[in-house]
Image (cartoon, rainbow, N blue to C red; front, side, top):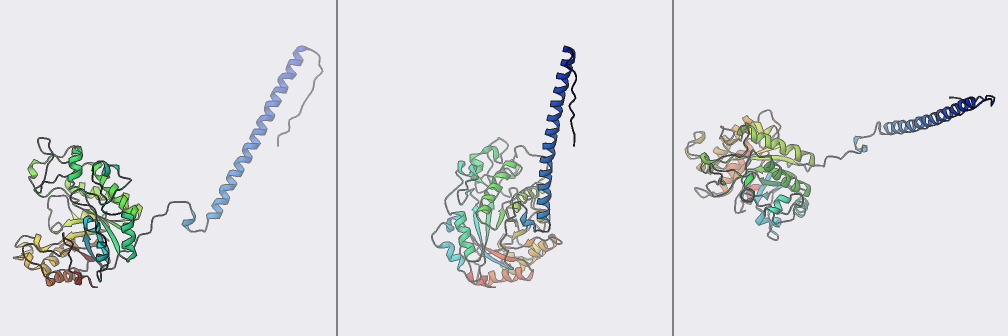
Length: 391
């Protein structure tokens, strides 16, 4: 403690009186400085004490007691996925989704969030570009669909068609793949594609996916997450193309998507061609590379899509079980050592010949024989062989 003593002198001359005034001023300043220091010390002591108390109180308590934003709980993936694809148009029909959910054995719905035509199935308030471009529709209410699916105890996957996007390509040519003359490039079906090198395209697709996750979707499955495979590829020009190759661009996009969607509590997966594990198809799909960043890989092992002689099979479409087995064996090798779930898309439609119950069952048996995480059935018309969904 500092004690300030006051000394007095005889009032003998003006010079002495001035000295006394100066001395008193210094004493007053000193007292104020001491008082301020004491207050600061008290304040610091209180602050440190509060921190010490807070630290002591949090010690030994679970992490949940700390005010940090918790990671959302995720619905468990079924031990064996048994599901079907549902278009946004079908989901818009009253009672249609309930019909699918009532199928015996079904435990998963894969629903279009954004489809091949660039349409978004609902109006995401957090994605103004979807509204401005005319992509956003009112086919269903995302949160209502999520509650409906979960009420049936089913798992909900949102399909996001990524780079094939005729809506965005036409409305925002700066985001599209171009031709050598600067016009928008189109594939054989006359559909425009967005530029896989453009980070703004990445952000748009993941923004749409994030809106579905916040509404309650359990998993986001990116489809057409590749470069174009049909059309006059020699005409393609990628505006602002970087030195990065296709082989690294697609894994980079998937990594970006995972970094944004995993913290929201969603799983992230990709659809890939059935031959992508057998050889490099030149479209940026390398299952082993992308598997580093995703929770699941869904190969589209439709037997009708394999050329004669593939895997040594003269007619793969006539031998669906054998074709699926050979293709999935290559995927098992490609994903060896990864924790990535392998779940195939199986053909439940007729192309090249009429598909029967036995054809679909043979594919299911092949998927189970390769110890996959289940299977999803694809039929563009939404008509499924329900009996194969039984456990």
